[in-house]
Length: 533
Ligand SMILES: Cc1cc2nc3c(=O)[nH]c(=O)nc-3n(C[C@H](O)[C@H](O)[C@H](O)COP(=O)(O)OP(=O)(O)OC[C@H]3O[C@@H](n4cnc5c(N)ncnc54)[C@H](O)[C@@H]3O)c2cc1C
Image (tube, rainbow, N blue to C red; front, top):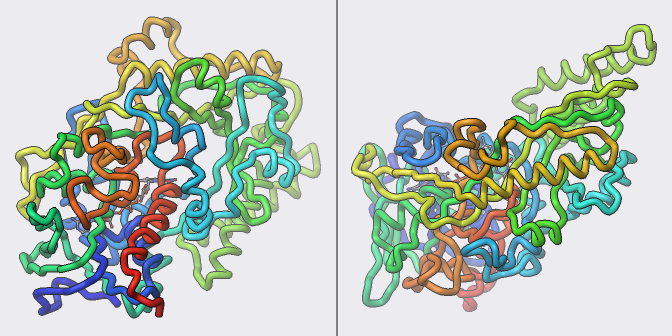
């Protein structure tokens, strides 16, 4: 059931579990807890559509590595930032959970094996294919070979795409509405979290609409799921969990530094490295370093993707798949006309290409000369206590202090990208497939001086906000324990990528959703007296 906080006369609500924030994490949690005879409250700042005044609550200041305006990197309405996410899904790798001697502050208190059952559920929630990220499997299934990398230092690594990307707000709106045990309050901004220091228990939270209407929610358990920047902001605003000055520190993003290019033989397009739909699962392949190479080199993990031009066949398959899955769900996709035109154009082109006299020379897939292909990369950032979110003096429309965001990169971050490019270039050259051009003639010097590299090749973030309420069994080194409970509290939990101690190179949402399923199980187990309905 949905309730608009602007329109209700209720002043107080009682619940068993109160979830703050209805994005990927909050919606997953609420639905996973439904049907267990619990009273669930979902508090959401926005409505069903973006609203400028609500979105403006996300503004803040940037003082570190140049970054996007903060309000453009996340969305504040029902469904959260999945309203414009790209849908790329992949799990973290087992070795990324381990402590690495050369990465300060690395190591999760849980393992990839602990998360595996929840990744299976997350695949379903994010509407991707089976929980199988074995490149060899998908390459064989697609009949498209991998690069013949042999025993080189490189691996083919793939991700799956939620296509079209699951918009949690529209996809799960009806499920929330129909669930008799979920009450979702819209336009309900949580501003205060009332924690009793003696019992270390959160007793209630206060919500406020932009018009000034307030409401109190009492609950046995509370979960904050407001995204990687707002999660620390809410804790800092309420002075909770910060007894060791850990809240807001260790902010991590995935780093892209553009400009490398690959010169490959034209027949690369018959290989596995473009976006392909295989048995209804959208796959994209790229390269990464083998775990043992990362360890030997003492660097961070990076994914290298080739920005290949789509063929008419791949465009046709993608558009047909998109139309098919939307229509089977009873929807007309937003970009219906675009996909229809793509289907018609691609079919015409495929037909025309059967006659060599009319074939299009620009397409990859011809013979002979080398083609220049831009190379994109997405790299892991190391956890760094100086890279952080704090509170400034400026106030938002609710009278709450805005964020000051200070994104900082270390020499290990820059060196790891540089070294991965060097190794990739050497291996591509050795395999005789082509050559990789990496930027900047005076690179060795440049890469040892982080300030200079950012002048030459501006690092870009990927809109992934991680690490700011990190998980650690030791309260001196983290904000939440291995169950995502805030240290120093008995009933307050955090959900989302703010709890990641390290971030790999993989886009975070599949892991956020898997961890939300795990947390739901943990929370439900605290109500043993409740029988499922
Ligand atoms: C352009 C873009 C592309 C992306 N592409 C990908 C991708 O391909 N793959 C991937 O894995 N990730 C991608 N992401 C990141 C992805 O969108 C996020 O990881 C994901 O949405 C985070 O989920 P969340 O639930 O933690 O936070 P959000 O989805 O941001 O949800 C937070 C919710 O909390 C609400 N809220 C905030 N403050 C309050 C408050 N005080 N009171 C009540 N409610 C509040 C917000 O309104 C929002 O609904 C992308 C992001 C962007 C911007």
